[in-house]
Amino acid sequence: MKSYIDLIQQTFEFPTMEFNVDNNELLFNNVPLMDIIKEHGTPLKLNYLPKIGEHIENANMFFRNAFKRHNYKGSYTYCYCTKSSHFSFVLEEALKHNVHLETSSSFDIPIIRELYRRGKVSKSTYILANGYKRPLYTQYLSELINEGFNCIPILDNLREIEAYEKLVTADSMNLGIRIATDEEPNFAFYTSRLGIRYNDVTELYKEKIATNPKFKLKMLHFFINTGIKDSAYYWSELTRFMFKYCEMKKICPDLDSIDIGGGLPIQTSLQTGYDYQQMIDEIVENIQWICNKNNVPVPHLFTEFGSYTVGESGAVIYEVIDKKLQNDKELWYMINGSFITQLPDSWGMNQKYIMMPINNWDSPYQKVNLGGLTCDSQDFYNSEMHSADLYMPIYEDDQPQYIGFFHTGAYQESLGGYGGIQHCLIPAPKHVLVDLDENGKIITKVFANEQNSDSMLRILGFKDESYVSPDFKNSNEGDVTEPEEELAETKN
Image (cartoon, rainbow, N blue to C red):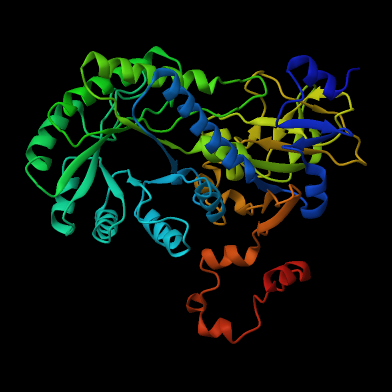
């Protein structure tokens, strides 16, 4: 019978720049994952930090090439979409490559201030403020503007501007407007709930912005849920947006920029390939063609790539802890973690990731289902992006089998509630950062240990003594001694 590596090599072009096998063990960006497992155990989340900078530099190169090819006269600004991952190590790694930032919540602003305190951003760093804004958010943004930060609130509804009329004391401020695009034809709604509808944009500008010497409309914002892809839907929405930009530019001299949003796709299968350069070439060419047709100067381009920035840096590694044959043909490999709690997109949106075994690549393979630890029937993973079936090496009971899910670096921690309370109280796994030192040597750092029961009890209120009756406090009833292992971990 053929081995697992034979299956992969006959199905894909393998090895790749990112994945390779040495001594029947998987390498991820030349990182020997079995060495990481031996040092830190499983379940394990890891981030390979150099991947973040690699993607930022690649995107800058793609736009630079497109501008040169089409003689495009505008500039390009790369913004990182913070909601994809708010971790300090992600933001600080991205900021090493001179990116700017896009926010979506009032709680983003204290992060901006902390980055400023650390010297990671300056007052000239673009802060594009998106999202539906509650009073605390507009207050924080107004304070940034009053202090001289290069902050551009992107208006999401008609009344938002009223907050800046009251709170901004600076002589001038720049504004953007997010335009509500039509949703994809198979979506539940016709028009996005986010942004301002096309018919209201001109009136908003004329009545609220042009009449106030403090305000300057600098940017129009374009975003669709499907992200950037070569489809009739994407091109028709971008074209409609650009004609609106040209219309607005003719009545608004300050307008000179567009934000074409995020959505540059990432690899979710070894089979999936994207020609990023061609995508960006076509976007730049279309924008320039429409502007030339309308005798309007081309705008400066902003993007706010989130998943593209951080997604491919992430991985989650599990050990298979049991094999269960539940009927004549359904074999389950049970993992020491949970898909629902640790990879929520895999069940909530049926998102697929690159999944491969870490070891035993020379073993024969079989069709399996992967099962998580929670009692929920949806806690499973049973197919790949390229196939309705899932295959894994056949392993013996006396040998371990590890599996990895790759390109998981965006959104999973925030959707799952990092370090909080998870379904069936499944703990957040250990989290390790992988980097390269100045000599190119692999180094690791523990960002967070596996969550322990003490932290969960604290969140759930069981550490609050006010809930305990005085009579019970004075008795020894109900005293619970935690296992020595867990006590030691708590003390540490």
